[in-house]
Structure formats: structure tokens, C-alpha cells
Length: 604
Image (cartoon, rainbow, N blue to C red):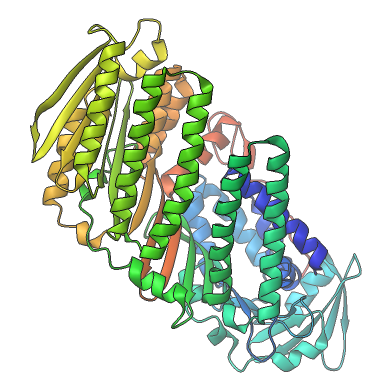
């Protein structure tokens, strides 16, 4: 179990990773992992969330954390689906052999789980349960692979090679395990019912009951998080002596801490789950939060859910390399908080601009006014109570284009700002460098302004992306502003506007979604970099047809949820990589013929 010092180390390490803002997702399939499945279920499962447990505390009989693992048959079926999707279906043979050998005695049709209770100390007490057909078979397998098994009158003790002890007792159809025999008094009448619907929804998941956690331990968790962030702020202050930057960071830090406090104290239930789903053809990770009834968090969820249908549904196109859409309500106090934070950032940006010396006095004056006007429009829009917008990017070599639209309280102020910037550019650039077409025309009720920039001959990368020139469009509509750019942005924006006007699905769209399609991105990279392997990977994804990575969020009166979803076309790339490594993972050398590999089977 982790003590408070270890917990602080873990949280501070996680904060370091958050500030670096780096994410890396790797899907790796090892047959040997299944060989250890039983032992992890019996011994390691009980310990795997104990690091999180030191921040919580709860008295019996209700558990504060419930961990769910779907039944073996479901796990094997999903593993087969993943292997097939990756083009490595031959490995199912090994999977089944390992499961039959090492899961002997385990019931394949019922889920397993773990319950965590918190009493006098921050360290959790745990009770895990595994469905069994024959406990003697399980103990026999354990004795041959993990350590010594000592049978007693009331329970059996497993002693690992490292000296750790786990006690086991069968009641009904389940074997219960803990590191303390006293926990057998916590055995529920129906353990499967404790898991609710989690085994049907996820391969593995956990539910945290926030209000079963004593307030003093919740406060302790908040203080540990605060200390970690304060350490990071101190380090940033040592490397940056700018007082304004430090003040802005401090303001943002306090805003974030208030949000964390609300989350910790006003969350009634938190669900984390992972599933491989053949129906959706994807692997996804869910985060669901249910607020405490009557709390400010609950009111925030209810308020944010009332934004209505988006006006920019046409920007969400599956033909794009990237698209996004968001439409949610903003409370007045949140808008004020945002405005306060933004003011410091704007002041910092203007200070840096003036100190850099890259602009003349007149240019700096125009730029500063433009920045402040645009921020004013954002603030006024948020004050009206709704944020709504959409964006899409097309990434074809030599023909890159983007288009975006957003709700605006005062589009006229944006138009005035654009024209002041254009006037300054016209004074600096020749007609050969830039052509302007203000009030160029009307597009579905949107007044269009166009800038055309010639890309210098020496800028080869830019010419590879856009051609000899790049066009920038600014559209002023009714309570909306549009921006597009690229080699041919007009047709892209026109299509998005038409789809938005005619969309029948706007009311069904989630409040937030970000979608990334890897096939066109890899195709673009192959065209720019001239890498044949990128083209091969793009072909693989095109054949698979499921190349999307997405993040979506939903907010309603019951709470909020987020999903990180990876479509299974990406698994094909793993199969391609395995083939390129010539015979790895049970595949034959060049012809990819299946080559059986002997698998050790424990003695019966």
C-alpha cells in the first residue's frame, strides 16, 4: 500500500506530465500477458488501485471504490476481435491455449471484481472476488507458479515468493481474497450486483463513490495537489523573472484549484472504464461524473446543457483531416472568471509585442487595438450565455484548406478590426505580394472579405502545402464570424455553410467533439516528406476505413461524460508493423505463413 509520502510522489509526477502536456497512446498485444491473467486477478488486482486509495477513506459496509472486470468469455471474445482487426487473428490459438491452461477452475461466464473500503487509515482495505467452478484447480495452478499454498480450517493462505500473503475463502460461486482474513466479514450477499452494469459496458472499469469519502481525506487530497502545482509554479518562477507572467500563472492556478475543490467535494459518482467494442469498431476510454444533487456542480451541468442546437454542424465532415464542434452554455460567473484571466494574458501579449521591437509604433498601435477589440467580442459573446463554433481542415498535398465559424455578439466590431489590419498591410506590402478584395461578395448571407498572398519562390514547404498563393477569407454574418484559408478556401467554406443551413442532425450533436482522421494526415505527410512508408500506412488505413481518433463530451442534467475513442483501423498498422519485423509474434518470415510456437502448459 502507498503511504502519504508515496502518494505525494505519484501525484507530483502526474502533474509534471500534465504540465508537459504530452500524451502517448500505445496498443500492444502480448500472448504472455494472458498467461499471467489468473495470477494478476488473484493477487495483483487487489493492489492495483491502492495508490489511489490513500486519498480516500470510508467506513463499511459500503465500498468507496468498486472495480469491475468483465467475464472471461467476454474478454476472450474482445481479444479475438482486436487480433482480427490488427490482422493477427492467428494468435487466437495461443490465446485460447493460455486461457484454458491458466484459468482452469475459473467460471468463464461471470464477472470478477474488487471492493475497497476505508476506515481509520488512508490505506484501503480490500476484498476481491473471482467466480469459480473449482477452487482446487485454481489453487493447484497457483502453487505451481506463484508460491506456496497453505490450507486451513476457515480459509487458504497463498504465500508468494516475495513473502506477501493473500487469504482465500470460497462462499457460493465465488472465491474471495484479501490480505486480511477479517475482510471476509465484508462479503456481500450478491457480489455481482455490486458491479451494477459495469461488466456489460466495459472490459475493465472502476466506480468511485465520492460522498463515501470523509471530508478530511478529500481535503488532504486537495492539499497534495496544491503542493504539487505550487512546486511547479516555483520552478517556473525561477526560470522566468517576469512579474506579470508570474501573476497570471498565480491567477490561473487559483481558478484551477477552485475547480478541483468543486470536483472533489461535489462529485457523487465517478466512473472510469475501458472497452474494446466490435459493434462500434473501436477501443474507447470513458470518464463519467455524476454531481451531488443540489450542488453547484449539478447546477453547472444543468446550465451548460441548455445551449440548444449548434449553428455550425456543417463543419463536422468525415472527409476532413480534422474537425471540431462545440456548443454549450456559459454561466455569468464563469464568463466573468474567464474575462479576468484573459485580461492578464492580453496585457502580457501586448507588453511582449511592444518589447520585441518587430513593429513600428503605428503597427503596434493597430495591433493592440485589434487584439483588444477581438477580446471584447469574445467577452461579449460569452456574456450572452452561449459558446458555439465549428472548424474543419482538409489536408491534401498542394491543396490545404481550413474553414471555421463561431458565434459573435458583435460581428461589426470584428469587421472594423479586419479592415484596420488590411489598411496597415496595404501600406506595407506591394500588389505583387498581396491583393485585397474587401466586400468581395455575399455567400449565403455572409459578407466576404478576401486577402490573397503570394508565397515567395524560396518558401518551398509553403508552396508544397498551398501552391503559389494562399487565400484568407473573413466572413461577417448575422451574429457570426467566419474565417477560412488555403489554396481554395471559398469552396470549402461554401460547403460548410450550406451543410450548416440544411443539417438535420444539429440538435443531436454532442456539446463538444474533436475528430482526427489519420489516413488523410498520413497521405499529406507522405506527399510533403516523400516517404513511401507513409503512403503504405495511408493505404492500410484507407482499406480499413476506420481511422478516426476522437474526443467527445456530453453534458446533461445527470452530469457530464467524456470519451476518448480510437477506431480499429489503426490496429491494422500494428499488424503491418508485425509483418515488417519478419516473423515476430508467431508469424512466419517473409510469406507471413503461420508458424506454431510451443506453449508451456502447467501440469494438471
